[in-house]
Image (cartoon, rainbow, N blue to C red; front, side):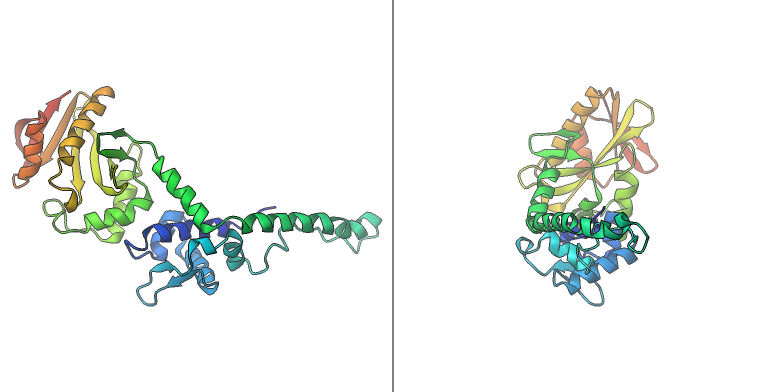
Length: 301
């Protein structure tokens, strides 16, 4: 006995859409990346939810948004949107009624009552669970995500694909990316998180502002030559500049690295990145020259 897996994928999609559709265009491709399902499967699920009046999907460019208040959508509504036959076939009975055996001829009738009561209990339970309650549970769990380290105002944690919308807003900003790379597309942001944030161990981590709970950038923190050394860097949204966050992150990373047995930190930046060089010097890094067009600053721990 098993409820359709499409129901769990649909809930995944609905929570993702609720959390991020106001920040970014949520497409079947992005949902496929988050769920691990093929985009064709996602499009089928979105189609079912749209027909049920739960979702709206924009024509042409795509992009899904909730059509109903999450308080008005139950788990049963979601299940029925994808399984029009409902719960009737949730528990099957083997076809044996034609066999010359009194048990075979009566087993369906014997089970009909108990199975019906079980199905009604499941229906009642699913009706009591709203999309709003599942969103609340999700947000609570995200808030409890363990930190790599924390500072007075910031929390550094592992990235996930649900961070893509917020990170895309940062990495697509030409001013933020001025000295780094051309502004990222959505697809490049997904690939970046997958390659550098979801590897083991991660090379970049999310930076969350404690007061607002928002992701405001990422921290670069990974082993570099020599073996006991780590490269350190940060990319923060423009509205977070000028608040001392870079200095706070650098000191926090140094303290964390020292506890982990890291012997040395390195910051590299272009000569034009005056603010980065200033933070390095302010936090005890020593200028060690230029290599491949980048200024190198080292700090022993």
